Image (tube, rainbow, N blue to C red; front, side):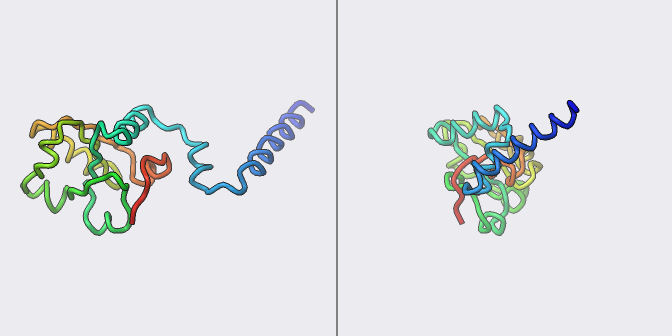
Length: 141
């Protein structure tokens, strides 16, 4: 009997959530359900306040599919990894560089390379999709 009562209690909560949020975009519902990691929330705040520069190290074709509005694109594979020149904009930023990519791997490598060049970096290991779910920044296309 107790199990039966718990089931109906949970069903009521789920139904209430659905009714309250049926007209909201799915991204808002995901944000409500997401547990945003503290380092992502901190980086998001610094980028929003202009205290950090958001660096997207995905390739130009990935960037063209959609990117964060405040980001600058510095492709890791076609520019940084090939021994290419690190843009002066990054070296002279005088603020932390928040680095992200599609899945986290290139961001880690790019962060290490930028840090070795003297930049202060924060690597976001979360995927681009996860950062979108966390509503990291406005999207541009």
